[in-house]
Structures are given as structure tokens and as C-alpha cells.
Image (cartoon, rainbow, N blue to C red; front, side, top):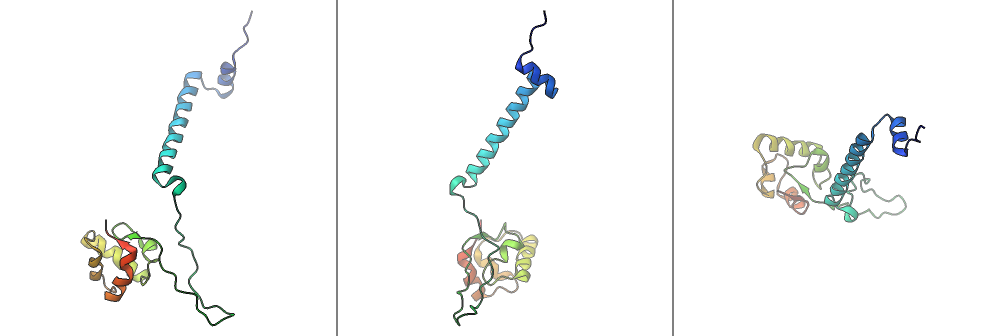
Amino acid sequence: MNPTPSIWQRLGDYFLVRRANQTIIALCVVAVLILVAVWWVRNGGLDGTLEEHDRPAPHESKTTSKTVPERKADFVVDVNHAEVAELVELPGVGQAIAERIVEYRKQNGPFQSVDDLREVTGIGPKTLEALRPHVRVK
């Protein structure tokens, strides 16, 4: 008499994977899910916030003569790790100055303080004061 195969045997035959291998695959899936959960919690979890970098530039209203107030950066950038795309979002920093900051950092090493930004061509005292609340050095 031929016994009826168990569900695991049938699944093993169907997927061509033995029960031991199915256990290993299940453990790998659980490990990946745990790693994703840890990453999610470390990056803010439910309290995480998104940065809006694609907001349109301020413009003058067509119906009234009032000007929309200039958008101020509502995030802080670490100038020792930021790339050009992040730096151009700062007030008073355009593409050219952002590229100079990255190039200066590559040639001279990390900035020791926010005041070191004065060494970058194109950043004067007024620009530095506008940047001060929006940049940090780690």
C-alpha cells in the first residue's frame, strides 16, 4: 500500500525544493524582514519625515501685486557629506557655488566649522550668515 504524501512532500515535489531547503529559505525571508524593520526604525519609523526638494520657486502672483515670500530652507545640511543636489537647495547657493563647496572639500578635507565656508570662492559674509542656520559641520 502506497501512503498518501504529506503536504510538505507534495510542495517539495511541486517546487522542487526539499523541506530542509524550504526551512532555510523561510529563515532567510524572516532575516530580511527583520533587517528591513531595523532599517525602518533607525530611519525614523512612523515619525520619519520627508524633505521636499522639488517645491517650485517663489513667484509673483498674477492676480495681485503681492509677492509670495521667499522660501527658506527648512532642513539642515551637513556640508561635509552633502552633494551638489542638496547644497543648491540652500539660500544663496547656486549650482556653481555648490560645486565649489564639494571641490573645496575634496581638495582640502572636511570643514572644521561653518566659518570655514568663507574660504570657498563666492561665499561672502552675507551669504555665510544666510547659510548659518541651515548648515552644520559633523
